[in-house]
Length: 568
Image (tube, rainbow, N blue to C red; front, side, top):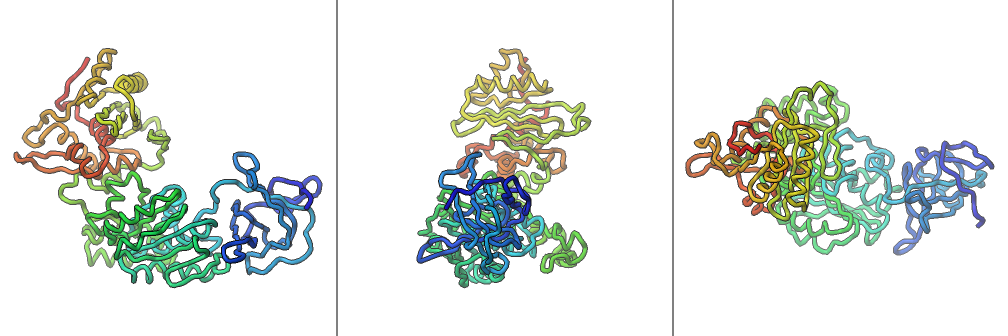
């Protein structure tokens, strides 16, 4: 076949020099190109704007067959082996699956498609392939799966979380043309079969020709190494033997799945590109599902869906049949009461109030987290505030210095009640830390600088003092100002932080690591009846990282009148 001219894509039907056609990617519809597969020919599908599947044929709606070239572009260059020349006889019409017939429709067309991971988003997949519309929180969950390895969703009743998980399962297998396995589980096989997989089968049937494969009761198979299946969570052995470079695990009714099963799931999460989706009602006080929103929050993208956010509630009428309504919420409020644990879990999508030893309720932490923060590496910076908002407010630095190799040194800056910046330093010596603090002092002229002086932190304080900076060396193990109430200064500082969160007098970045550290803190009473905060060593014994960001936050908000050493 002779070499065909190559052009950029533009609006469908436009002519370029030489009479070449241009096509608009947004107008592309489903396309199918037969290709060899296991056990005989198997169709390869591409769908929507900018989708790359090799081999691929594509055509805009109502256009007859034509010859064209597809190039796979990666880093601005044509990828090796990324060019296919196809003729119109291989193009199928995506609307009904019938072949497009007729003579070649003029000069060839070239589609330049991006290389790398297929760009078909689950939201577009739901709309264009499955023909369903999602509401905002469902879209949020699906988009999160394209950006995070682990997503945890706690939701009230009747908000379509199972429907969302079914869409995600079909999307994952459909968009991975090579080896891919999706596993779903729930506490009982009845739940697997009659909740999530009922939704999967219902979504599959209208799109069966496009999706392909064979759909069974709790299994969808396209090839020996490309399938989805449902497993019960009654035995960890169920999860043995699954290996694929692309793994997706969906845990439905996640609050009822035992830690033993979660450990088995982790053994499956060792592939190169795994995804984990947890969905459930937040009804438990312990377990892996709850930890995803507390101690392990730093590795998850947490999503909360309240019944108050339902489109039916927001509109005051039924917009989406089947979703929670305002009448249902009012009934539950009358029956359960608006301040009960069951109302919080089943309506608001919130866990029951924490145990007696939890220092900070998660809802207080989440309420203090401000949206729209820019994350660059490990520096969390808020979007700029209006100038008037920060005018006249003092700046304070809190510095937590690492004592062990796995710990991090943290420099936290606040202006008034608002945390403006968190810098995390790894594997740096005391001189480097002192240099970073000195730079922050010169730039922001803080009213107060509180540095943890326990252990190597004393070296940072000494170096800053030698350079003439006014800093406060804080030993949180020292006696509290109210030593009859608090076991030490650390307990007094954290209790003051607790009161700030409870009264809404603090604003922090939406930093999952900081929020997880704060939510994991516990307190107890010593033999003299004084409040004592769990030590860093005890936190590590629970298998959690050192709360370095949380400690820096506490130092930054430590009252000036607290017991401190003053260096001048």
